View 1 (cartoon, rainbow, N blue to C red):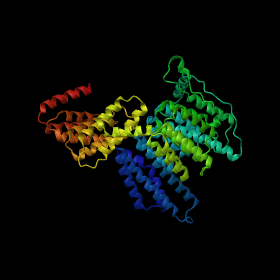
View 2 (cartoon, helix red, strand yellow):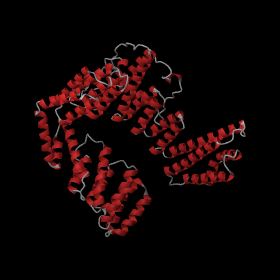
View 3 (cartoon, helix red, strand yellow):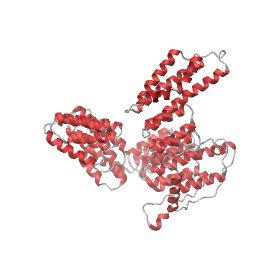
View 4 (cartoon, one colour):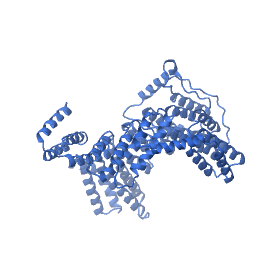
Length: 617
C-alpha cells in the first residue's frame, strides 16, 4: 500500500516545489499538504472505501486549489518573470487536472452511484469544461441508462447550455426509446422542439426574412420500417459508451448561421419518421396506420406530432396535457397555426377536461396583449360560459373567476358573468353538490369499495382524489394524540396499491405518505407489531437504496426488540435481508444475537440451516 501511495504522490512533488520556490506556499505548508494527501490516499486504498472518502479528498483538493489561485493573484507582478508565470500556470493546471483525476477515479470505483456522477458534472460545469462534461454525461448514461434525471440533465445541457439542437434531439429520442413511459422526458422533448421552432421564427423575424411556405408533408412510414430503423440505430451505438455530439464542429453552430430551408425540411422528415406510432388497439391491417400531420415545419408540425403521440399514451391525464398546452401558449413566437391546431384538438377530444380548457383560455388571451379590448373581453366571457356549460361544477366556477382576475378584467364584466351564473339552470351543479355531500357522509371503507367498482377512468380518478383528501384530513393531518389504527392500516393498504392501482399519485408520493403515516404511529406507539410488519412489507417492495435500507434496519431492530425472544420469523427475515444487502459479517452478528435472545434455540438453528441451504442452492 505504501508503494502505491508514494507512486500516486510523485507527480505532486514538482508542483509543490514550484509553489514553494516562488513563495506561494511555505515549506511547512508544503509538508502539511503532502502529509494530508498521504493520509487521504491511504483511506482510498482501504477495503471498505465509500464515496464519502473520495468526497472528503476532493473537498480538500478543491480548497487547496482555491487557496493557490488566491495567493498567485496577490503576487507582485514586477518580481515575477515570464518564465515563472508559465511555471505557475502549469502548476495551477496540474492542480485542476488532479481534481479531475480524483473524480475519474471515484466514477470508476463507484460507477452505479448517482451522487458521484452528479458532483462530477457539477464541477465540470463550474470550471466551464463543456467537452469533459459531455464525455462524463456519455459515460454516466452508459452506466445508468434507466435514470430519468440523468437523461433530463443531458438534454438540457446540450440544448440550453451548448445550444446544440441536433445533439439534444438525438439524446431525447434515445431517452424515449429507453424510457418510453416517462412523462418528464416527453415533456422535455416537447419543450426543446417548441423552443427550437420559436427561436428559428424569431431569428427570421429579426433579420427581416420571410417565413417560407413549405409543402405539406405527411408521414407514411410503416411500423415495421420504424422498428427496423430503430434496431439499426441501436446496433450502431455500443452498450458501454453513449457518445454525445460535440458542438465545436462548424455544422452545429446554429446561433452563428442561418439554417437552410432544405435542411430544416430534412430535419422535419427525420423527426416524423422517428415519431411515427402505430395504434395499439388494432392489429393486422391496421398495424401500419400512423399519425398524419398536415402542417409544415414552420407551422409547428413537429410539436404537433409529439403532442398527438403523447395524447395516445396519456389521454386521461388532464394535468399533464394542461401543462403542455400552457407551455405552448406562454412561449413567445409560437406559431398561430399551432395554437389553432391545439385548440381544435382540445375541443374535439378533450372538451371535458377543465385544466386543458382553462389553460387554453388563459394562455390564448395572455399571448395577445396585456390589456384586453372590449371584443376580447366578450370573447373570453363566451368561452368561460361554454366551459361552465360543459363542466358544471363549483370548482370550475371558482377557477373561471381566478382566470378573470389574472387577466385583470373589469369588475363590471366579472359581475355580469356572476349574474349569468346565478340565472343559469343550476340543476347539474346542485346535483353534483348534493353528491359531494352524500359522499362526505360515507365512511372510508365504503368509499374505497365504490372506488374499486367504478369503471369510468375520469370518475374513478376524481373519487380517488377525494379519498386521498379524506385521508389527509382524518389520518395524516389529525391533531389528536392518538391515531385510529384501523383507518391508518386501511390508508396504508390503499396507498400501497393493494386495493387497486392509483392514477393521481406516483409511486414516490405514495411511499412518502406511507412513511409519514407509519412513522407517526410508531412514534406514538413503538410496540405496535402489526404496523411494524406492514412497514417492513412496504419498504421491501421498494428499490434497496440507502434510505430504504436504513429504514428497514430500524424496523427490524424494533421488531426484534419486541418479539425477539419468542418469534423466530423476525430473525430469519432480518438475516435474509442482511444477506442480500451487507454480507456474511452482519449475518453472523445477527445469528449470535438471536441465539442470546431466543428461548427455543434448537428450532432456530434448524430453520437457520434450512434457510442457508435454500439460499446456497
